[in-house]
Length: 62
Image 1 (spheres, rainbow, N blue to C red):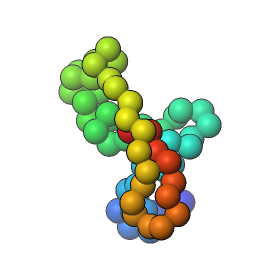
Image 2: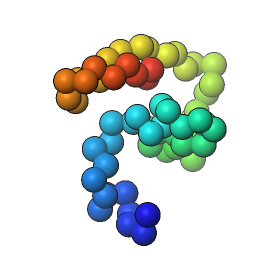
Image 3: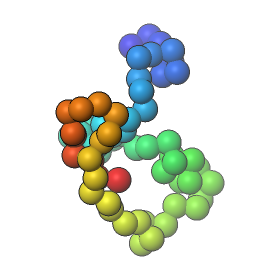
Image 4: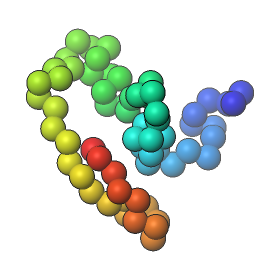
């Protein structure tokens, strides 16, 4: 709050996007593609993986 994202402690892991209960957050790639009219919902696939940033082993859907 009150700071731009690059000035925060964010590590750009994407977890906030994954756990947002309203779906209001989107990743930067999707944001850029939507702004350039290149986003095609029919070409989207989901890959389940485990985050390797730390040893916790959080499950992610990419």
